[in-house]
Length: 280
Image (cartoon, rainbow, N blue to C red; front, top):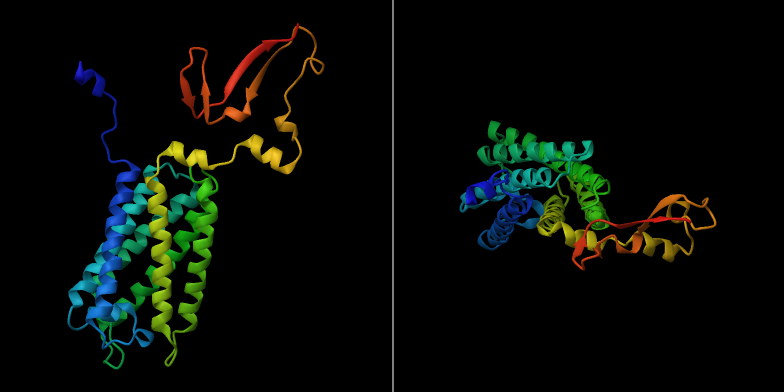
């Protein structure tokens, strides 16, 4: 009997499980970065990228930072895919997160050259991977934020996503405008990382929410109509005077889209209550 009940059930991890895994990776990365600032006070934040912590004492902590960030981006991309984000923009955004994940592994393998040190092949590879990582992450975030508006379960998060994306855009622009000697490129680098963490944590936390709770955040259609103070043609319901006698029509109770009860008194959610009546 138990075997029959388990037939057809999906035992694969859910999107929330992947989101929780990504949160764990990003949490370690955030704590490791804070710890490195305390352990390496000889590196001035204004004139050093965070990747410079990979060179010298405690460099292994920065190496693990790259690896955990890579794992977090990959896990988040899989979780978003499992959450039925299947539009073209969502697909491209998920692919770019995977590209950034691979690039972060390259950054971990090839450390950067610290300011004033001779240029090495490892440093050149790291610089290229840095450009690929930043560009892929930024474009992936823009595409994913755009795709949230096309999926009902994510539509209520769209405004938050675009707000954080605007901050990431600001950090992206400031980062490249300060890539000159004497400019505070290190502070710009840290600002970009902070707003990036904000976007990543926010998406993961929203992904952990149950689907029904997300729908409850969305205003009902009737509430939007009442707020506008008008009734759109799509919301009008036929009356006895607008249809011939004997015509059968259906009426949808838009005010009970999220929760409704059937004739036996059982509560349901997620579907509108449709009643059938005949005009006599």
